[in-house]
Length: 448
Image 1 (tube, rainbow, N blue to C red):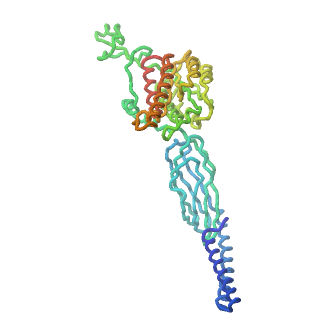
Image 2 (image 1 turned 180 degrees about the horizontal axis):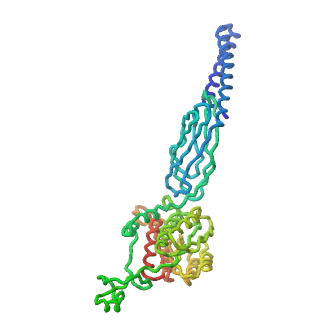
Image 3 (image 1 turned 45 degrees about the horizontal axis):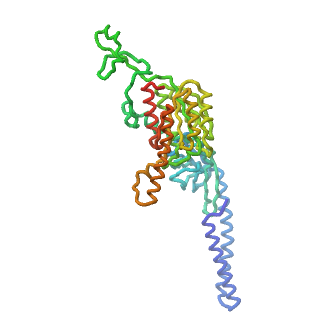
């Protein structure tokens, strides 16, 4: 309970009248003037105070009706980070008078909100529904608190704050819009729209699918000579990519992944790319799993079926990069101990030349059983510094330092390639298409 703005204004006015009355009394006693004005003002102030006090008391009693007011909230339980959703607030008035209510909500931190707060007038025995839009900018568990209602008394002299409703927790997932767009595209459009290209099959390491008539462009190795001689026409063998293979992600949660690239961190870019490739791999019939390291250790053994993408989302939605250093050797050792079947291991990280002394033995451990794809994220600012024109000495220093840094990263890439690793050096915005393209190349070449 608290006084309203109108009551504070009334009190200030009444203090002004009291001051005039006191001033006139002082002047009367000092100069024997204004006797009628002094008595008149005092009488007005005295009767006005009595009437105002009564009004204040009875107006205060009108707020007892506020106990018959309740509020509830409807909000989607699962959201994608950065996506806008609508929240519904329902305010019930079971009191015996019309209420003016100022409505606000305790929404999660790191959010952008529109159309809140609002003021509504609700009739007796009725309700009002309010809507506002919210855009949550951080992944993880988002907490909604109680709904805050500010109710005015009948004369508007008092206000009462009520907090009603329930506290709710919703899950804010990585932005899987890329997966949703991929699902909606037709088979012919998927590769071109997502920046994914398909390479020519070699025929090795692929599963036999069916026999069909020879087509121009088929290799001689595809021809089934026995079937051709029996049917007196050329018959080719048609292959499909091998299924029942493993894709295992090694997701770096260390401090390097905190680097921001425009609106998202390297870690968020990695999550989005991992989810896209995971869905594509599951749709291709492969099993997908992941292991996180660098301060957060979570493991999902490889499983098949597109429904498994929901389990992956539930495991990673609240992961955030830590301040810990990334231990590549420990991660490689743990992965080898958990899975022995030859798999495609996708290591997504941001490593530099000083990490090579630890990265090399980790890759050697992984190469003993698996095929390794190293997706090394590069800061977009490096590319910009190389492309910007050199206008002064400071620009020249920036250009040479950036070029030297990129060359050192290239050494890391070259040494990884020499060890049989599929090494990708890419900016975060290109990560998804690069690793998906590499995945399809691996599948079609039969390298796994």
